[in-house]
Length: 98
Image (tube, rainbow, N blue to C red; front, top):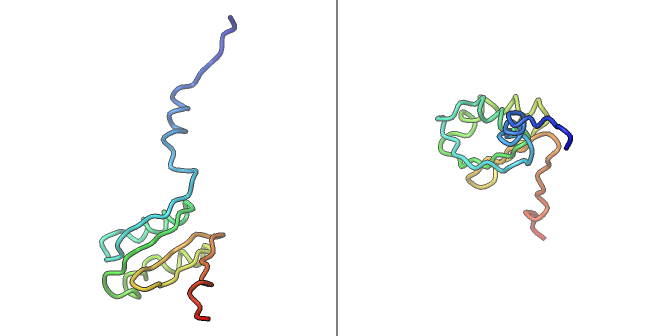
């Protein structure tokens, strides 16, 4: 039987990695979360759906420009702020009245 090298530590690191499948992250935009956390979440390819609890302009000021500069999109929909990373568009076609 031939000998082979199995790196279990490396395999564990790959399994524990958050990289991979993008997610939609639900949260509340109320000023309690560090804006850098929202930016990092979007930079990692995830979309945000944040319930707005307060003044949107004030609450999003800490991360909106950085997300836009990175190619992301921000859109207010009803009581939520939808934030998508670069390459993920927001389809609003079904919102149009016919």
